[in-house]
Length: 148
Image (tube, rainbow, N blue to C red; front, top):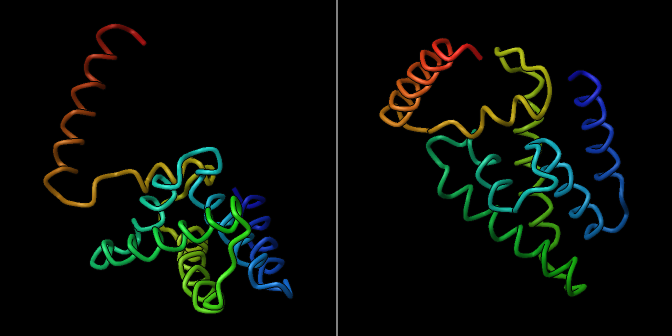
């Protein structure tokens, strides 16, 4: 996990060292996917995981990331560039930094970025989390009975 975080930090610095802000943005988006273990997943999974750390402002963070994801897709697939790239880059940088901080400072000791990112898939509200816990305990009992 340490090597993954070190690689992420190198990617972060390299992305911000770009002279072309559009390329910087694309590299940061790739890092966002890396930090959420969603490189081969749909962008909605990337966005859902990246907004997990914004409990109170999750809806707002999701809207921001959707707009950034739309820009990323237009840029990659249609060579679209915007004059607002500095603003987009700054917002994306904030999201990437929050994920880096989580990976560096988490009280939970994960084995990998993939392991940590599965944590982002947990429900955000207590009722759904309690229900999930109940189901997991039940599943664990079934597994112990069938011997796997």
